[in-house]
Length: 319
Image (cartoon, rainbow, N blue to C red; front, side):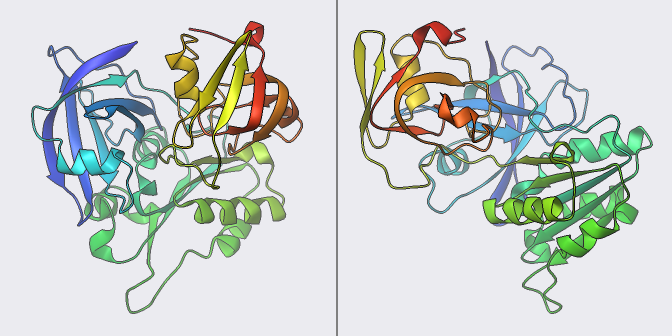
């Protein structure tokens, strides 16, 4: 189910990040926002509908949503169109709010590690921590102060809980996450968002220091880009064999062929679109399935087949 909305305002936050305020097209209040929530945006284009996930950055109860979008230099249409074509009054559709990342109620201490645009999912979570009296801290890295998204807002609202790191300024500071992780008390939950290498390094450091996996949380939105050069392949569904081109996403191909497979994040992180593979080899590119699960399942939002794969139609959780 989608919600019809329009863009109410657009603001330039940094040289390459814009903030968009969205309202219901028929002036109804948008659904309640929970800490760490995101939405899928369905933006019409000449090439079809561009679907992208974006974290909600506001916590207001006025029935509006706000998202911040960074212009990616090699954008395949998502951020480029948002930055160059979307203006006040632009109409589109969005999903209901969804949560991959959310604060753990039983956490003794909450530590947020953000880099660049990775601050966006944490804004609502920081407010939740403060309003409910939770212990928390934020470590936020950016190249320079001028490129630090919501710098003034964070300094005013969470001054005592936030430490900034600017890698291209005189002191050339970077987050010493290994040292930081060692100082946190037992029962700490760690939340990470930023570039893939940033997330991976902190996850590995936390694991090496003995953090239980269930206390490490991360969000890694990206567009549906293939991390490894791949070739076209085919997918067999019952007696039908469907081709998937190099630049196509398997999830989209399956839905275009009438399967209506549910999805949420579209980045291989939530497991909503999981399907069962009966035969064939899969190029797994998700961060959700375990190695054992990858022997039988795949996430078609990011993963691909090799040659010919066959999926189990009877196991599909169709909408």
